[in-house]
Image (cartoon, rainbow, N blue to C red; front, side):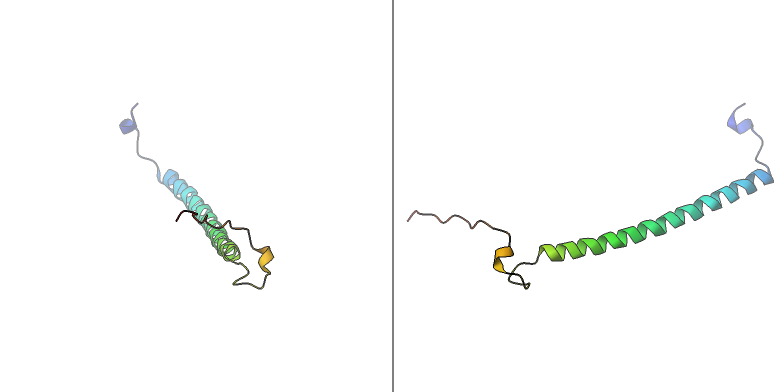
Amino acid sequence: MTPTDQPPPSYEELAALVVEQASSIAQLRAELTRTREELRLAHERITELEARLAQNSANYSKPPSSDAFVKPAPISQRR
C-alpha cells in the first residue's frame, strides 16, 4: 500500500495530533523563555567583564603597580 492509498486520518487521530502539537509548542515556548533569560544574563555578564577589563590605574582607583605590564614599542637607534 502506498501513502496515497491510505485512507485519510480520522477526526480522533487529527484531534490527538493537535493536542500533541499544542503540548510540544508549550514546551518549546517555555524553553525559549528560559534561553532568552540565560542570554540576557550572559550579555550582562559580558558587559560587566568588558568594563572590568578596560579598567586601569588611569580610570580606576587602583595603584599603577596593579596595571598589567605592557611592553613599550622599541625605539629605533638609527639616525
